[in-house]
Image 1: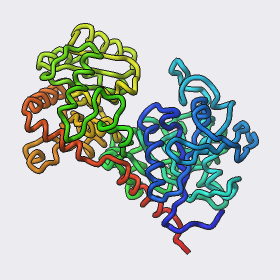
Image 2: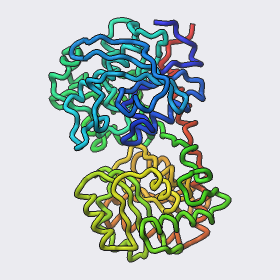
Image 3: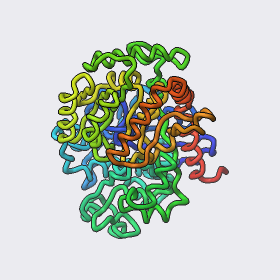
Length: 493
C-alpha cells in the first residue's frame, strides 16, 4: 500500500448504502451527506462509496470510470465510477446494473418486499470497500480507515480481517442495531468468506449469519450515534441479541451524537417557511403556525398548543400511542398535525382519528420535505415517543426552530434534550421535555405537562430561546470521528 500519511491527514473511505439527496430512507442518508462534508472541513481526506442505484447515477455529475472488477462468482462484473457531489466530497459509485439498476428503493421493491438478493447486493458493496482498503486496490488513493455504516457494509471489516496482505483499519458505525442483515448460513461461503468465520466468535447469529454481527466482531473500533445508546445496546432488550458481544467490546465503543445540516435546517433562511425568523424575532414564528393550520385544515387559533409529528409509522417510533390518546389530547385543548407513513394499519388508524376530530387533528400520509420543514416551524411542540432511538434528528431540528420537543427518555433523545425542570429553567439549560412511562397514560400526562408550560409565556419563551442557542452542527461529532480515525492509524514515521 501507499505510505501512511501522518496522523494529521487521515484518509477515510466512508461506505454507505444511502445518501441524501440522491437516495434516502432514514437518518443514515442525512448522516452520509453531512458528516463527510464536515470531515473535509477538518482536513480529513474522505471519499464516499455507494451502490449505483438509478437515482444515484442520474443525480451525479462528471462521472468517469476509474476501475473495473471482473466477474468473480458469486459477484457479477462491475465498474467503479468517480463523481462529484453537491457537498464537495468525492464519491465512488459501484456501477453494477445486474444488482442495482432496478425500480424500487435501495433495499426493497415498489411493494416493500426486500430484494431476494440483498446479501449479494450488499456483499458486493462490502467486498469492494475491502478491496479499496487493501494492497490489491486498483486505485492510487489508498484509505487508511474503512468507515462502514450499518449492516449493509458490515462485511467490509470481515473481508479486511481475512485479507492476507496489507489492509486499512476499520470502524463499524451502528445507526440502528435493530436492522442486522440476517441471512442463511450458506451465505457465508456463497460470498467467498472463510467457513471458519461462521462461528459464535464471528458472524454466526442464532444459527444464521449476520452482516452486522460480522462488522461488530471484526472491526477495529465501533461507534454508535449517541453515548446513551452506546450504553443501552450493551444490555437486553436494546442489544437485540448482540449485547454479550457489545459488552465484551465496551472499551472499543464510542458514542457520538449525530449533527444536523444547519444550513438546510435554519429558520432564518429556510425557503419552505411562510416567514423566516430568528431567536430575536420569535413573533414571526407564529406566522408559520397559522400557515400550517390553514394548509392542513386545522382551526386557525394562535393561542391553542399545536403539536407536530413527522416520522415513520413503526413500532419503534411509538406513534401507535396517538390513536389511544387522540380524544383526550383535543380536550386539553390542543391540536395535532401528523406527516408520515409506514405500517398500513396505523396509517388507517391515524387517518380515522383525523376524520373524527376535524379541525383539531390533521394527518398527511406520505412524505413531503417542504411540509416537514413547515411542521417543524409551525408546531409549538414536536412529539417523539420512540420506544428506542439511537440518536434522532427531529428533536434537534425542533430545538433549532424554537419548537421544544417532547420525547421518551431513551438513546440520543436523552443526550440532546434537557428536560424542563425548575433547576434546568434556573440554569438556562432546559430545552424540552422527557418522559419515562412508555404507555398511553404516561405519554398523555407528558403532553398535558407541555400544555401547562406552553401557557406560561416566560417559561415557554425561555425554552424556545435555550433550544435555538444550542449547537447541533456536525463540528463536534466530526471532530470526535477524526479522533477515532487518528487512533487507528499507524504511528507516524
